[in-house]
Amino acid sequence: MKRIATTRFGALDYEESDILLFPKGVPGFDDHHRWILAGDDDHPIKWLQSLDDGDVALPVIAPRLFFSDYHVNLPKGELDVLELDDDGDMALLAVVAVPAAVPMKATVNLRAPIVVNVKKHRARQVIALNEEYEVRHPLFQQAPAGEAT
Image 1 (tube, rainbow, N blue to C red):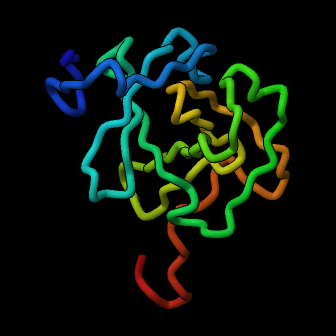
Image 2 (cartoon, rainbow, N blue to C red):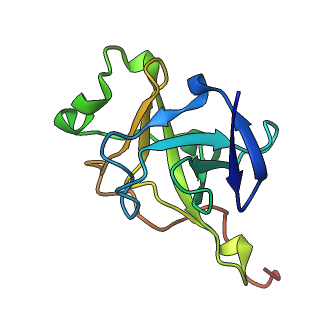
């Protein structure tokens, strides 16, 4: 068992098998190659915690939990680094942005999902070819007119 001191979780224990390797880093965090998923198993929002810097954690969701019709068209060449041999070994995550003042206006990046090879523990954020997906797609449905938000 290994341990990292984090800002969000305090001391966080993890196994070597928990590590997701991002060979090319994460956009905005190019030097961060080793990450783990952290958070409550019962909660749909998880945290992608950097093992290269305990201060860096990104909220993520499995997009199909919120958007059942979410299907991305991913460029094959971008996925080669993940060594995906079988689509069944692939999982998708999407980064969430939560404004501190208005959490219900959280958005999710559906245009550039994080693709994970769950078998080989490799991951990469990839820009989908689907132009209908937004970088800042509302995570929650808007309240009907006249209702308080």
